[in-house]
Image 1 (tube, rainbow, N blue to C red):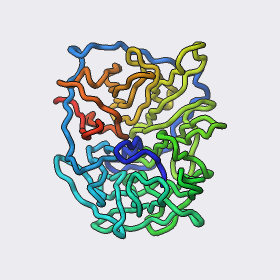
Image 2 (tube, rainbow, N blue to C red):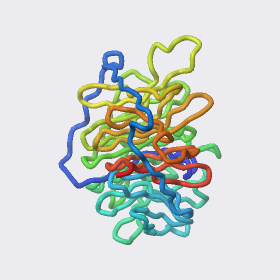
Image 3 (cartoon, rainbow, N blue to C red):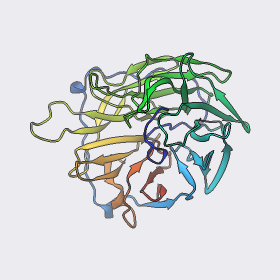
Image 4 (cartoon, helix red, strand yellow):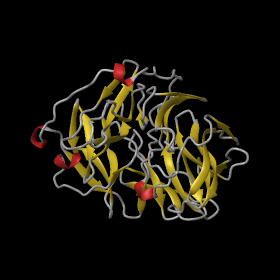
Length: 365
């Protein structure tokens, strides 16, 4: 099944939410990173920064993402589930398989997938699912494929995910980005092998207008490439670059990671976070000592959350008010976060976890 990371370490982004609106065009594509303007910002110390609190999620609830309105899709045992305002809503399972929700819109419709194995089993085909009105419906994939899963649903009911075929126990041989029909069938949007199951950089983010982001993971011959799309059309966010596209907001701002050109010799490769819109590409500053930054969510205020690391350590960064922060400098007590999931709510909340617990991390006031 697609997306090799275990559910506890999902880094997929499905940040739908908000009210329905008319469709919009695909954001302008930057022609060249070198022609974009850099964006610098000061680093503030914790006493001058915002304050956050980490609230532990229920122990039996395993999250997969957070929506912009604060709903958190995931699973409880074999059942897909949604967490919101301290309550868990069970959506159910399909054919007694393990089921998980990956995205939910403002109407309460959710999508996800199920598998006959466990959620950590990579070589068992999955089924794309739609949870709507108290019912669970399988969404068939492309003809000739043997697994599929749904990753994003917008407020108009457009559903995106993947459909593919596996070749051995290491994962699928091919995978195609598709748009699922609620009445049956799927339509290919891209050529096969858009995703690589051995990569954790395969995202689908969607906004209320139906624009989406997706990353084609590199295969050893081609670099990672971030795309933005609408309907059945996708275009690169940044031309001629090694980049990812993690998420976008309702204003069409896209965030992702990009390998910096002209790397200094004998130094670690530097990969920075960016925000791209019709005016071009802006780079986010690094945290001190960090050499890589991987965004996972952007909200309608333009705030960004993601992970930042070097070869020996990592942390979660929050970018807000044109300033970047280490989240542990803003919490009452530091936590040993190992990952941050996709999405960022419009109130600035996100989901992160340690090896023993998952948390919703949110600003105070």
